[in-house]
Image 1 (cartoon, rainbow, N blue to C red):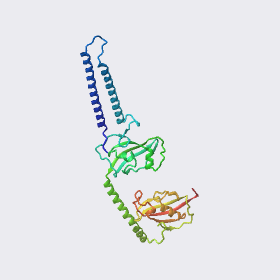
Image 2: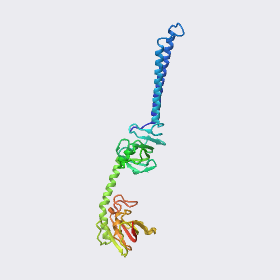
Image 3: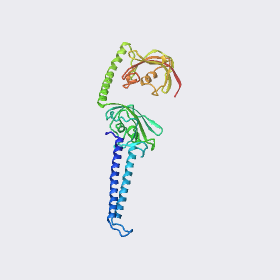
Length: 353
């Protein structure tokens, strides 16, 4: 997309208007001179004598004056719209190619890189309508082909790295294509996209990094089964796994109640990797952890294991990544990481939630 230089545009508009005014002024002067010459060359018999050319000259003069005023009005309107000093949204200008209303802030980094389709862009942003703020995108986003004319991707392609801007988008179209919702809940309120574009990675480099990452995930996924088998052999685990592939090794048998779905349960736990490295522990914090069984407040492996325990039980639980944090991982836990938890069930609430 060609960069839009507002200052250059306004200068060209002003030069054009000035040239037109100069030409018209010259023509008016020539007409007045012709009328004056005609009066001087035509003999008069009295004060009420009028040359045949005078009415026509005055008519031409008024036509020229009207043309001047019309041109000045058009120039003023163009300047008004281009500068954003008037129009539908005060302070915002309309991009003629996309129909997007926009406003840039601070320095314009027009010599910096402009992102293209397929690039990975880094940004700080907010989407707001009325008093509501929506965040449907991640801070790092791959720039896609536009889903509709004047969408958020088209807005990002108007920017250079380092720019800060505000865009006004069609809220109904945005909700339809990005939120999969045909109802725009903010009525006629415009949808503002405020963004600071701080980084860009070319598509080729991004695709290479993604391919390397996907290969790494495949290798880790393939190695997970071997690592679980090695852990079982090393620790001489004899129990059979659950249908989910979870190993529950009871180290202390309790005599209390077995929890039921939607009951609050309180536990102490320590989480470790297969190599024994600890990553979390309620015991170390001295604060037991309480959650509602079956409410999806914990990883699926915990739901399975704790539902099979009784109050007073202690167990070591081996959970494959499918029932832990999967291919995404979580805060210091790499993708496809099987985990080991030492869990003690302390109590179960008397009433179901």
